[in-house]
Amino acid sequence: MIELTWDDSGIQRALHNLQQATQQLNTPLNVIGLKLVESTKQRFETSTAPDGTEWKENRPVTIARKGTGKKPLIGKNGKLMDQISYSVSGNELLVYSTMEYAAMQQFGGTKAEFNHLWGDIPARPYLGLSSADELMIQRILDNYLKNAF
Image (cartoon, rainbow, N blue to C red):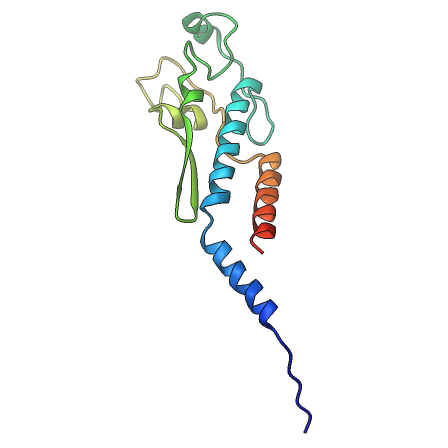
């Protein structure tokens, strides 16, 4: 009879570390949350959606109400952009805006659907992941897992 034995303590330790690292993702999720808030706010400066498409320009009635030279979704005080935030709960990351009208700006709406509007509002997606965001998330998670060992 042939009997083989080996020391798998290194593999066991690596598996244990991997299990611990993936159960406690607060550190990388907080880093990712900060980065996603930054990239979301940058969309307001570039007037682009996460997929890279440009937002529709403000209509003349909007410019008249907000003043000339204003970019879409940036009002007199930039509240929508300033209220982009994130939260981490367990292994879940949420990026959001606390502004009441945030969903209307993200998805758009028509006066026919929402009679309180003074005109139709085109969708101007600002929340979401761009391809650069996805790469950033992958890099952060890769680095986190490499450092977990």
